[in-house]
Length: 192
Image: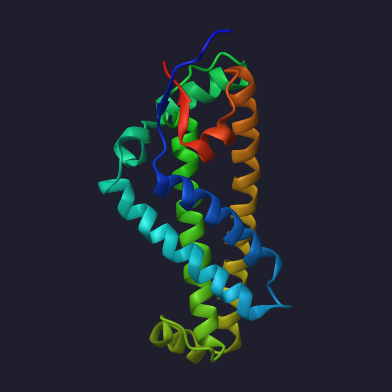
């Protein structure tokens, strides 16, 4: 029986961040009106973690840093072309499409959380953006509806990105015969 060498790729913070954000996002997504307290706390948790992840993208471990997975648009498009023909190269960290997806997810989660905070404050709930929310509230019902629509758009866009991310992980796992979901639990991937 051949023993496959592995190497640590994802640090504990990246792995914990990933799975807590998954649970937090879906908790917030599915508890919108019925359990507003849970929705708000899940949103605060996700937003706080995303902010920490952005910081970690500059000071964290090698594969957690943005410099490890930010690629030029031409490189991303070339990778996607190879991806659809199942000829994509294996990367130890995030591949070019995966890196772009991480950035899109972080931006979309930030926008979802920010618009949620503004809505919460505008509706009289308080929150950390109380002053900005007061300005939105002063715009009246139209201002509140705009932020509500933006919040819903970004929540749905994040869900769409998450589905694309899962498809990419499944295809990449099959093409390279490597369980990427397990790697996000253990932190280890097959050595190159």
